[in-house]
Length: 255
Ligand code: 48F
Image (cartoon, rainbow, N blue to C red; front, side, top):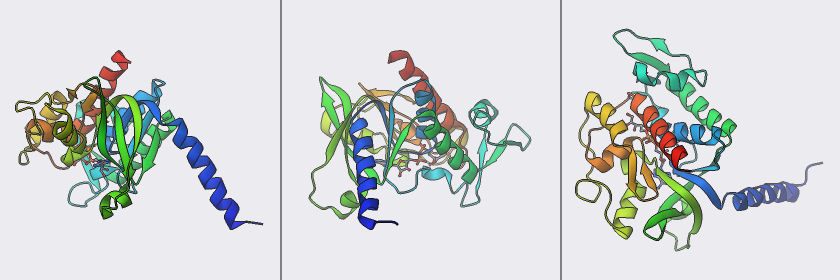
């Protein structure tokens, strides 16, 4: 026999237990794109408590659609280990280009992060940061539905030793930190804004620009180029994976 009210109770009991368990974590990652999921996997595998907060219902960010919705991505040889390591078949396309199935990439990046112990909250938006002693010490969250409709509902706060802005082109955690807390570690002190497509430069700078952009706040993936005024790069994803890996390794040394 299935009792509909019991179904409700089971969902709420488990969710509230898990919610409470994640109110203070080692690292919060805003955005479940390829950069955020890669960072989550490496950090969680090292035993850290990781919470990913994803605005949309489906994690995966801009990776699902490959290039113009042809579900294939291109990566460079130096990032291949990050797909090989989670059993994603990568094809040698010649001339130092490799390709992978974009849907398979999202599925396995997500599954491997969860298997490593990372928790994903979907349909939840990071709307602000918590600052203590001039350091980002957590994020402010609300249901995406509330955020989109603009209902006047006050948010909740989750604490973390480090926060990663993996929100892609929006760089929204950096933007709100700049607006409310002060200068970022960028040439102007603000969000410089991304430049037009140039894959060769963008793929290099996305790794260089992955850094602690404000005390306690790292910027990763496309957000790193958006913040630092560097180009976008379209459906080549090696830099996103390497950016997530770089941030995770740096944070592991500090935790
Ligand atoms: O955009 P996205 O995939 O970021 P990424 O990991 O990868 C970029 C590539 O997909 C592509 C590219 C490759 O060359 O340029 O764009 O840097 O994923 C970002 C995720 O963050 C979520 C958003 O829904 C997406 O899934 N997101 C954005 N703002 C917020 C957020 C927010 N305020 N709170 C929570 N999630």
